[in-house]
Image (cartoon, rainbow, N blue to C red; front, side, top):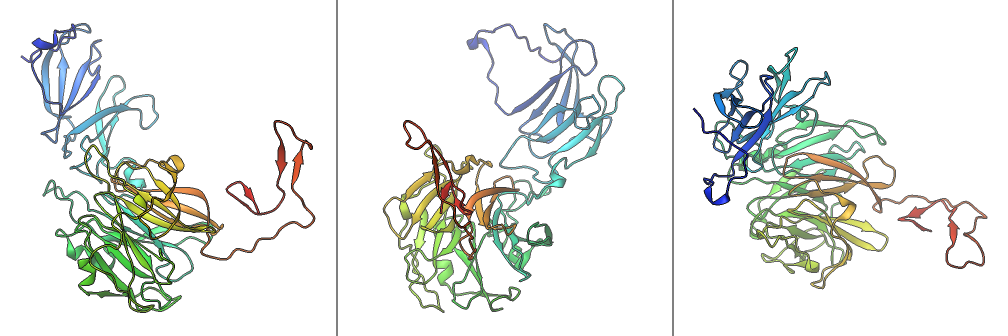
Length: 457
């Protein structure tokens, strides 16, 4: 006989202590008018079903199924499964969905089990599949870091995504099998479509499990007109792949084993950006990291041979720090955008929101803050942004990675200033303000073709 749970307003001092590792679903399984219970536990992969032999006013659990549902496919979902009643197939009957309740260690691909309720009345659950919704999404396990570049030189921007890894059933707790995923754009200039072409691009998995959490970034470091590749990692340093293909050719990479790249160690979880921050014509490197600051490494080399010191030139550029005081973790992940007024910086962080700063340069002085919650975006922990014009309309799109292992796509209002776009103004038009003269208010009409952030040009 199980000890009854009675909701009678017990005196707190008389309650026995319990750990917090439990997930609870209550519903009337047997149709007798009281609530039965499905219980998940932080220490188990299965669910327990407890039948209420008491009443609606006083629960008394008299039977249990310790491997629910024993009559169908037993839930075995690492780690800490939680169950939910939802009408998934819109047939008017509530089905059962089971997913892990732990966001740090657990199944991260076949992680949403759908049991259809096949009973004519009441509940009888039959497993349909284990990747509800997930099978229709991009999901690379844990902690995605996107970068955008035309890898195959077909004129369409492609996606390269690094990750921390994905859950291995026979080695619980080990998700340190990161790699690079290549998604080629098989759409058109105005309608992008991405197909997964390689799950281990450039063979980065050879460095796992000793290294993982790969974060790619493209830029021309050697001044030959094509884009090279930097890859940040859990170790906090960099991999450098030099593109030997030349401009407008499909990328061909040769890894550079210069110890300089390993010496540029920022501690853990380096996330690189390539940009000229001091205006000397050489491409510098920004490195986000676990602590939340963004490191600036000045390029002291030449136009064809990059050279960087072991230690950052500025350890906290612009005063940026995404670290949370509560746990000392920041996971800064910067991206740099070219604007008519200079360079803007958008960085992800551990809390999932994006911070934006304007007119950045190589300085310890605080950058001008545009927003701590740019675009009101919050994709969950460890946001990692990348921006590019994916549909050839002159406006940048935003792709963000996250701890959950997926990607999110947003439209922005940022103009793509990396390419020249002709602007045609309608002749003979002038700014029209009404009423004229104006008092407390005025309405203006801007008929000129080009508008940027609500400002007419």
